[in-house]
Each structure stands twice: as C-alpha cells, then as structure tokens.
Length: 460
Image 1 (cartoon, rainbow, N blue to C red):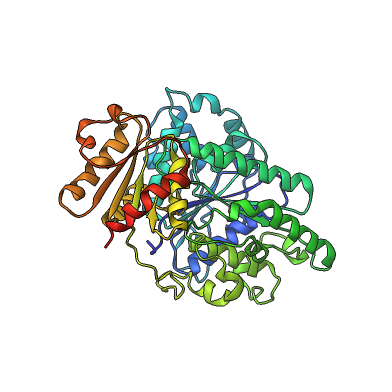
Image 2: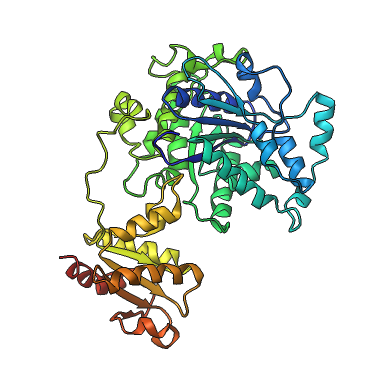
C-alpha cells in the first residue's frame, strides 16, 4: 500500500469518443510507476474496452469480472471469492506489478450480451438483494488492497452510470469534448451525482468533481481559448470544493486540457509509456497532471500552475511535499452538529475563521478518501473548545460524539459550549450544567460574534 488515503476515482463522460478509457489507463500507469497500488475496474458493461489497452500484459485465460460479481449478488450468493478471482495482474513495464484490472467479465460476445441484458437492476437493488450493501463491501475490499481504484463508467444516464458516479467514487472525473451536448451532459451528471451522493447514509467526504476538456485542436487557437474560457466559467464551482483548506483557482483546469493528437486515435496506446509527456501541450502531459492531482487528493493544486515539475514529483510515493501548510494542527474550536444542520455549522465555521479563529467542522475538512471517523477523532484530540449545536435529544451518532467530547472536557482538557437551537428544556439534563448560548435566529454571523471571544479566551 502507498502513503495516501485510499480513494476511488470514477472516469465518466456523457458522450463517447472523448478519450475517457485512454485517460484512465494512462493515469493508472503513471500512478503505478510512481509507487501506488492501482486497480482499474471496467464498469462500462455495455461497451467494455480496458482489456484492449492492457492486452499485451494480460493472461489469455478467461477470467471472471463485474458480470460474474453482479450475477452472484442477483443469486444472493457470496461474492468474496469471485471478486478476488476477478482481479488480474497487469505487468506493464516500469510498474513493478503494482497495476491490476477487473474486466467486465463474461466469455464470448453472444453469451456476454445475453447475460448483461438478463440483469434486472431494479431487483438487484431491492430490499431482498441489497446490491447497495454488497457494492459498499466490494468497495471496501478493493481499498483494503489498493491505494487508488480507477473505475471506467458507462456514458449517458443509466443504472450503471449512477452506480459508478454516485455509489462508488470519492472523486468524479468528468471528461467532455468542446461541444455543447458533451459539456452540458457531463456537468448535469456531475451536479446530480454530488447531490445524490450527499443523501446516501455513508460516512464519507463529499464527492469532488474534476472537469476535463479533451480533444482540443491545438491548431485552432481561437477556438481553444474560447472553450478553455467556457470550461473555467462553467466548472469553477467544482474546483472551489477541491481543498477546503485553500482557494484553488479555476484556471488550474487549463493544465488538464487534453489536446487532439491524431497519433493517439489509432489503436489502444498508452502515452505514459512514451516520451510524449515533454511538450507543454501534449496528451501525456495532461494525463500526468491529472494523475498528480488525483495522487495528491486534489490538495494544493494551484501549485501545479507555478511549479509543475515539483508538484508532479511530489505526487510520488515516499516523496514529502515541500509545500505542505505549516499551520499548526490545533484548533480553537471543534463544531459538532445534528444531522440537518450542516449548512449552519459550515456557515458558523466560516464566520469564525473570518474573525481569526481556527475552526474544525467535518464538511470543510474532509478530503477524498479520508475515513470520516479517523478525521473526527484526530480533530477532537487537537481541539481546545467544543461548540455543539443541539436540537433536542441528540441522535445516536451525535450522542456518541458528545460522550467522547465530554470525557476530554471533564478531564479539564477542553471547554464545552452548547448552542441550543430549540430551547434548554429540550436537551439532556447532563448538558444543562454547561454555560452556553440559546439561539434566537439561525444567523451564523451573529452567532459567531457571540462565540468568538469565548472560544479564544479558552485557548490561552
């Protein structure tokens, strides 16, 4: 295993012909060459093709794949053994056996097509078959073994596409060509996926989206500039969410633009195995930039524009970044909140930060691949004041979090400030002994004014 938080990255395009599978394979090879254990998963079941890129290094013997795993779920049979057998080594040069593949599976085109069309997706996800639970378990098994899992998704709006863009990923790479239908479709799916993923009962960081413009003709300079501007204006909101600790400029997306080079249109080649990465605007260079951003969890991406070579070198396993923030890990305040009050917690944290306080709230701290519980535990250890939003009796998760917080508070290691949202008489008696604030309105700015001095006074 590498040194990064494990993560799943889905490559998606609304239309075909954008170079999606090519980009995935190229990124996979770069990551494996840099020392990461990488798994590629061909979930484009209706038009599988990853095996063609890796054909020279694959066994010719038929292997199970995603079809066989899905059939096991449909038959309500254990899938651990078949999912293990489905992982094939791909000994690409310079990767030291760190690259593996799960194909779409099946044997023979007729048999494969028949088996694919026999899958009843609605039934697979009903209460009896619980494919969602199986999918999460499969994801965890992959991440137990690999640093980074790259998933090739089906295009358009489809059941398979929703699995790949909502259920599986920590990062969603959406690729599109310079035309309206390709761009609009990709952005619509990205928006729908981030909204849908936020509703899933999973303790994961919010889904991050990386938009990638492809097949840009280098000789058409005016159109290239026009579509780069369109990309930056359309996708700025996605880039803002990449790293909660910094302001990432949308212009970094220009470093990921993939040019159209006719040479790569012939056959299934891998640019990461050539020297084509050298030119400033080249396919290999763009894919290498994307690999570096993924390896670094979308953090400090602005440095890619200023110190490109150092940024890419810093993405290798075992290389310490010289650009890591030097700010202390201690927090002046840790904000706990009940489900349904995430927006208030985020707004309060930002208001306190604007006043100079160092504040932790999970939604602003989690990065792709982070384990929610581990991040919270570490933040609690490094926090001196706990601001807890309360709305009646805490639900199970927040109640457990409060118990953990009070252990530190009662040991004299921190202060507890309850923020009561619905009246003191609605909260547990054990919490009423702490001096706190009763909210008159959900105005985060006014609440920050009330809390700021109390938070900093306990930090000395």
